[in-house]
Amino acid sequence: MSSLATVIPHFISGQRTEPTSGRTADVYDPSTGQVQAQVALASKAEVDAAIASAAAAQPGWAALNPQKRARILVKFVDLLYQHKDELAVLLSSEHGKTVEDAKGDLQRGIEVAEFASGIPHLLKGEYTDSAGTGIDVYSMRQPLGVVAGITPFNFPAMIPLWKLAPAIAAGNTFVLKPSERDPSVPMRIAELALEAGMPPGVLNVVNGDKEAVDAILDSPVVQAVGFVGSTPIAQYIYERAAATGKRAQCFGGAKNHAIVMPDADMDVVVDALIGAAYGSAGERCMAISVAVPVGEETADKLIAALIPKVRELTVGAPTDPASDYGPLVTRDALERVTGYIQQGVDEGAELVVDGREGEIAGDPDGFYVAGSLFDRVQPHHKVYLEEIFGPVLSVIRAASFDEALGLANDHEYGNGVAIFTRDGHTAREFARRVQAGMIGVNVPIPVPIAYHTFGGWKASAFGDLNQHGPDSIRFYTRTKTVTSRWPTAPDEGSAFVMPQMG
Ligand code: NAD
Image (cartoon, rainbow, N blue to C red):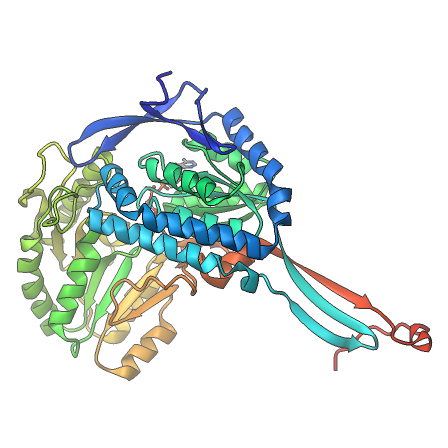
């Protein structure tokens, strides 16, 4: 086993912990294609040590009053802001998104930590005075105990923060298993939490792969698992977590449609689609990967306007402010995306911009691919049915609003969906009838703000309750309801009468 200097270890009981499993994975610099570090892959014993550390810290942490926990969170938020620029550079170096985009990743995560620092208010229960004679009923929210988060590569700051901040604020202690592809920022986040005053063991990070995940899922100590990643793994985690009686919320993949009505402002639509389909190389679960223009004329105008804009995208080093987007995360991801482009061609979709031949401003060994645009995609094409997770936009033409709506509704995924129109009635109909969790009206990536909740429908989410906002507090707490009777006068104590409905 190499030394701590070259192997990204674990963070257990408030310190970086020498790995013992003997297994590691490569961490790449996607902009050069070179391996820049190794990350430890935890064994079951190492995961158990992290869970034990969280279990030991939990009673003391939960016993701190919510105001005191909130103060520590406020300090944590402060430190995240102080270190935001440095963290963004680190994040970008492992993920490949531009540094500007990495700042957005951090910002969206910090906002949820800010939300969670309102925990005294969020934990307030309900109270009914005199539900019966001398009987009061009240409910309180209590932490679950030790909880876990398993997170994807594409938002290595935001999604861990979405999970850990509400959970910890509510009095739980946490074991985070971040993506093994970009593990450094989660480690720094744990160090900053400690610096902010979170006692050792409140936030632990175990790096690893399936072995570490399975150890979390099978642990009888872990009470809840929050997962974000691809749909097959989300479903696997949901089922395996349920087998040991855990609470689980597992968010999966997406194929987000943008419906373009004939009355939409085409300049606005094109700008929005370029950002939403190609930004961050399309590696966003809320990326728009399908545009559905309604009517042939709308479709022709859209394609004509998109082609030059896709070709003009600057694809280069994530540290170069001129880059619109950087490389994909790994060579595997690059091969998967270029494989889908060929698949679309073979299926008969019209590849009007071929990203495989586009100009790249970055290192030729980096995992870059320029933007691709497909026209006349059909509902049975794999490039339409499956998540590509790259800078590829598929245009599927619809004859009417109902046909466009039907496409979005019939799709397996239901994460986000957008409509572009100037007509309020159409927008309202759309928002009411569309089968997806997050809806944009003239907004291409409708990621809700921190104090609302985030979550998809259909194969984009398994389990109940959304991420961040009030749902996150509900997910990481359980309700206890107390019915108590304190007769005020001696004769009122003689006959016990249950409160009656009606
Ligand atoms: P992934 O499913 O490969 O990995 C997610 C996590 O699961 C990682 O921590 C990984 O180590 C672990 N994992 C991978 N294979 C596993 C296995 N066989 N058993 C147990 N654990 C395993 O996802 P990814 O490639 O890191 O992230 C991209 C995916 O995440 C896309 O599908 C994207 O749409 C999705 N995503 C969804 C949301 C959402 O909120 N719905 C948000 C972001 C990303």
